[in-house]
Length: 306
Image (cartoon, rainbow, N blue to C red; front, side, top):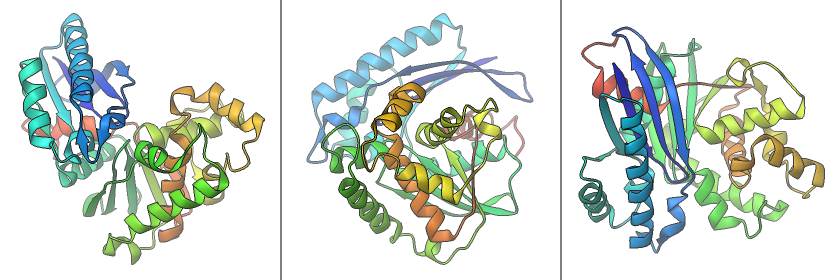
């Protein structure tokens, strides 16, 4: 059976097609549109132009899903539509234009689905924290004994931090400082997070992967990014990578992750600040996240392992 998920993010809209054999999930195709819908948000309201750009991308991806013989297609949105004042109107408009249901996840659902996807693809340590960095939100989950204990969704992401604080393509040292202050203020709202001390942070999502791809490119590492780990020191190094606008570092980013040029440093700062807060020493990645967790919990819950 072929399943498809279209994920309406703040930075990208993505179609992922999977094969489900009743036991395991295999990723077949991944098609991405770089929409950055958050740029159409002014005064917390998304413009009609922004909604129409989403509709156009979703319609194109729905056609692609049919071409890939997807038998069941689900479309969901997260902070891209959740964190705007005209959220209800936006969802209604998109549903009407695409003539298909759209599932808007709340922050707790997004956190839970990210954790549920992650725990099915990685051998979790006894305890740790998962960090799912999107364009407009970050979901943080503390887990212990393979179960989610605390979850939180914060309205900060790699793209909205860039838009709010960076005036050129890459952040200056002073702009990085402002990003860090913003991140710390948001983290302060998670009371449970400040009392934790864990060793491992597990990243989810494109910004989390971008940090690892940067490391892979810098040291010409052939190992899969999902088999790598970074120390706290290395994460901090990449979080400060562009402070002096060094040409060699800029070129490295352009070569390794050109589509993440504007968001990799804000994403790295989020990870760095969380690692410092909880005294974590290791950073690793999960290949599964909210899309897979959504499938297991919303679509395959009667067939998959709980």
